[in-house]
Amino acid sequence: MDLHKGITQSCDVFFYNVAIRAGYRQYRRLRRMAGFGLKTGIDLPNEMQGVVAQLGMEDAEFPAEMVRRRDGFGGHRTGDP
Image (cartoon, rainbow, N blue to C red; front, side, top):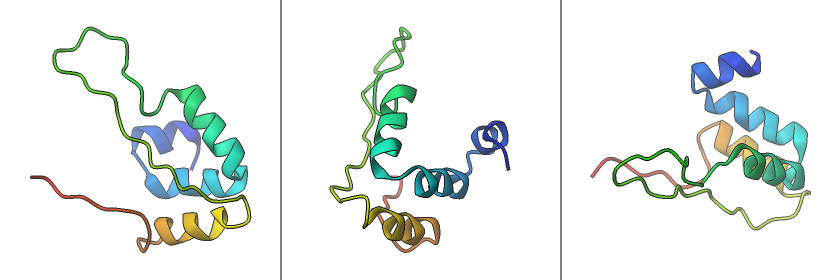
């Protein structure tokens, strides 16, 4: 799967695999560059800043956590209220 398909299909597994390959520091840098967690800057009513999870771990721990998340066993999950 390429980046275009990963975005258009909103494929979590694609992005987890990108994160694993990039490493934690690079992944954080890429998230900031892409604007994750920030407002869009478009005049949208009631727009709120997003939440980007901070894993708080070193590069050595990062791949294992991303694999757990990719496989559905890690991270926090929330449902619709």
